[in-house]
View (tube, rainbow, N blue to C red):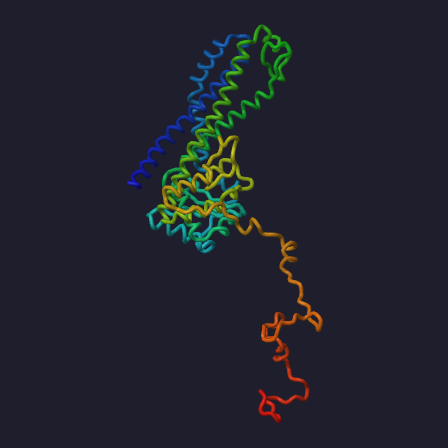
Length: 409
């Protein structure tokens, strides 16, 4: 029943994700409508709001096929070249069994145990503790881990992280996340384009309408007939652009947050070791920031430490929430936040004085004296026998001595 619930949840999550991706296409059309409003304001100054909205709707219908073609072309380009772009940003390089036998064998064993095709294995040189999966089909699937993660995790923890990323591939999360990032990139691109265009505009000193900073005084005077409708139309366009960008971020987050819980559960299902996943998360916690990585790459990672205001734009659930779910539903044990040796390691200059021990003074007035029969603190032998192991004095006879009172040994 547990497995049925898990896979049912995965299937419903995929359906919701596809609907959200369709919503992202609608956001592109919203941006086109906002751009049409701006174009109508510049083309026809001093008109009413109804005029601008009617003409903008007409322009949207005319531009709808071209906007769709442009969005699809963007996706096609990203489909074939997104992995190259990710590798260029992260510096990940494909490794073989000979180069990383430990990592390769762990991933291969997981794939064999479930009959999963072996994805490509990549390693990026970074002290950060993180990993991510990428790809849109079986030929492109890859799992990238950092060198810092390889050094910090033991075999069972590394196996859990690989199982987490492998679950993202099995559940179809990787394709949906990559497509969502691509389409959200389109929204961000057009939004930035419009805002850059707005920065080149200035409000006429007469307050009658919008004009370009490069426009002539004659064209500016043509817009002095009125401008209340133009102002409202521009405000509507700006509001639509901001709304489209915010919704694209919210949709993108909806595709990632719930999937992390499923990937953690999938890792436990693959490894049968919830404690390994928990300790791996605790070690990765707040140590996963990839220098130079874009937000799109960080959203694919095991943990994304980047957070927005009021946690609204956090792309991953907190480690505490994920660990709590594993403890509650998988029976794991939470050790709490873990400190790594690299967190408390000091430099060699600072550590050297602490490692040196002051020399123990020796001499007739400095040697400690122990009571008879007790171990001497300097030599470890019973008191009075400090010289027993020393060489005999010159002229002394070896072996037991004979005397008038009998044999002495």
